[in-house]
Image (cartoon, rainbow, N blue to C red; front, side, top):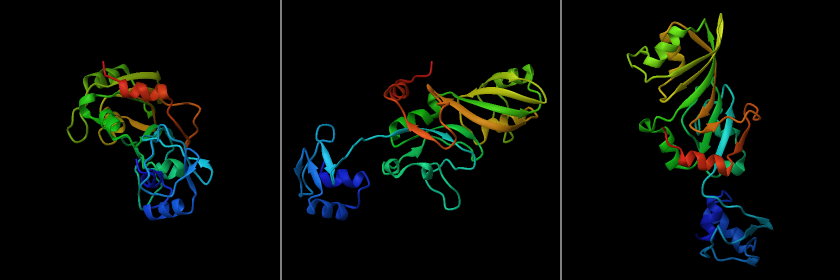
Amino acid sequence: MRIDKLLANLGYGSRKEVKKLLKDGAVTINDVVVKDAKEHVDPDKDRVTLNGDTIEYKEFIYLMMNKPPGVLSATEDHTGETVIDLLEMDDQVYEPFPVGRLDKDTEGLLLITNDGKLAHRLLSPKKHVPKTYFAVIDGEVTEEDVSAFQNGVTLDDGYETKPGKLTILKSGIRSDIELTITEGKFHQVKRMFEAVGKRVVYLQRISMGPLVLDETLELGEYRELTGEEVDLLRDFQVK
């Protein structure tokens, strides 16, 4: 890879700005000052520095965020704050995007990456990747609801959902539940409960495929996935 392309891709300026950095002697490859923008570098083997600081290059970035309510699952929006706005600039330069969407008022696990191939696999309807949610429901959730969800319910637009696994954690005037579904229709969890005469008052995604929300992450916080977590996502196959 050309050194000017590497630095530009990492957000250190436009090609023109990077060429000026090179001309000023601010860049080294393996401790040798490089001024030629066409100089080739192997990001996996060569040590590159800019103004004395080592440049870390990686093709893909994988982030787990505990999405807070009120923030949009989008790369940009003219009216509201997005999950990308919550990222440090060092991470934004990789131009990552959220894998799927969580409703604006929904909290929890959100994968953010620039790995389009992986994102496509996780979002493809053909893959049936399970997503599990914790929810507080206004109304008593019953075993009848468990059976209805297992058979699939009919949404307000006539769509019949695929089977969902509903687990009652606490039943009462307000019920705590977990629900695992393998599709992602618009407001699906909320609409599934509306189909059985109940209302979701709090919703949090706690897992997606093999990826489980890190409970140490506060709302709005995020971290890079571990190598093991990335491997689990890449190797994941629905049984």
